[in-house]
Length: 323
Image (cartoon, rainbow, N blue to C red; front, top):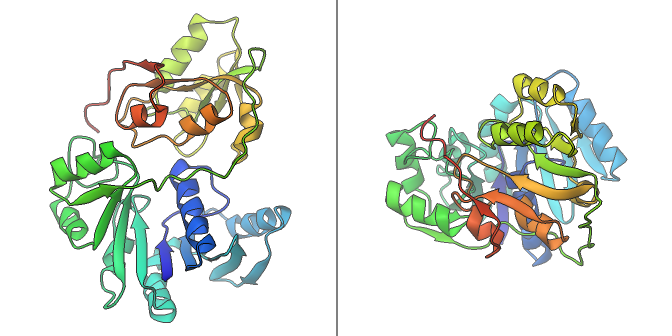
């Protein structure tokens, strides 16, 4: 089959769990013989972002096929990737790619909360449109969502299929949206073997993406209560300037740069904290850590218990009630 992923973020390199999961899913489909293409955008609209992407791809040994003023095109692990430089052009470019590539299936996901790409994909006369639900926050209905919308919910009902990343998400789609959703394992892990990195003498108690919804308040309180313990914070998409300032104000908290090399991070981690206050769909960093022998303390909320795979270290938290 010809499969097109419409991804309203940067596809590679990227640090978000959903972005990494979408990439591994497309690479797995390509490995099974499907012809796979991705349409995505730059990570930001800041000046020089295109040049930074090209430099990063070159440093990783990724051959760029075309680097024009409007798009960058490259192949990665059997998948053709087209990066649109101007985010506002993404829906129009998606229409062009559907016409040129003639996909059998178009995948969209919750990285596109406004559902602009889903709306565009649904105009295809031939392709089956499948929506990948990787979070409840960006769905347009139910108690976990940030921005409810009846019109966007109706758009989701037009999709040919909806897949939840966890049983929690699939049940949420059914209960609160009346949508016929299934759960299949779309949060793939990189193939092993995995190094055994857990050590009692590793440097840090670590949290990735410290921000309000991910439970930075709990992380900061722990750092204050345990001044003899070294903590590490890895700011990514959710960490704002106020969060970063609060982290820097703690002498026992070290800020580490974002990385998509989880082995390098876990090699320095004694315990991983996932103290989320929102209903996580299924945090991929949890099984990534446990596969490498790093223990995880996580919130008993949303799809996190599924990610913990029966491990007991689930902690009660007071979840966010509204946005």
